[in-house]
Image (cartoon, rainbow, N blue to C red; front, side, top):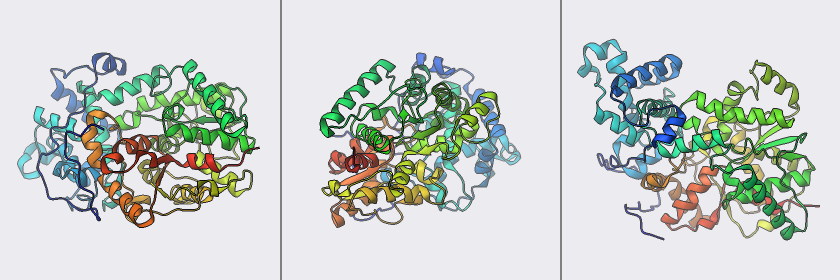
Length: 507
């Protein structure tokens, strides 16, 4: 493995608050989106001449649309409760990666142009003119936030820093400096149906190959159907599940669960992506365009249930936004939403997380599992931030924490949680979420993973953990890349349904 061109933080026994190192991450600039990508997204492809006026106008537009943004910009009293809660600050020691400082990059401009005190007495209230230097800082530091919302858990006013980051990125897009990684993905998913740009025939070939592999391994003809009209379940899963390791092992696990339970199901070539990067850019219309493909596929295929695979932010969008984006949940009142509500089976949650579906099947005795087949593994579980802090699972509060753990403990005999304060609602982000899973941000990703790597290292030393179970595609991709930088073997990273797939008994 090639050596990193930056220092890898040292793993210690405890997660330490670092001494401040002003500006050490200011050099980080993610690649800007090229002209073709920006054109497709409807944004300028370079910094426009009147960028300042456009930025202020867009900020005013967002403040008018989202009252929460104005509240978050007004409410902070600089109490300091969030300062040591961000994994990027803990990993980089750059004070601008403290949530309060990152917010202030926008708050100082907001005060200057949108508050009476900032207009009349800017120096007294910390208000500043929007300059090119400040805009450059926005581009650098708003792409050093994974929108994980851990800081909001500790904020006494509940300020959601992620919303400020989203607004910053949306303004940057409107003045012509969008991010290459996220905007390219948003183009692919809107043109082709998935983030990777995999066309339908390639998906069909991949699924056929996986069916052959499963039958060769088990002797059972487990199917991975696509575009089957009348199937009970439409499975929406991240496109990484179709081909890359360890993601594909979870797709095999889903297929075995459906086969063992006798549930008819299908994937969709039109809506072959659960992820929705529109969330990361803070653009509601883009997020809706991506989500509408799923509604259209459900109507076309006549599915009675919509189940979402292992993807953290996809589940957040499905659980928290699909109802207003597409009418898949409750609340849609256009003719297509009404038709879909009639079509979906009210006996089940709509949408439903794959972990909830599988856990229910095991508890009801509808599928059988043998946890002893996983006895080679000592397992711990990483709570995905978007699942932990921005959604629920099941019918009880905290189900998003308990259901995945119940499921894991049903299919393995050796399980240990990481330390309190690093899991459940207080979980640390993997360091690659929110549109940061790109190699041009590798320094941010590696350093941002330090708190999670520290907690993992402790449970490895104490309990000999050798499997990190995940329900997020971004977490899987991030950890397989960055954990080896801290001395871990990438093979210890896998999905919860990778463990399920090994344990479920097939006919």
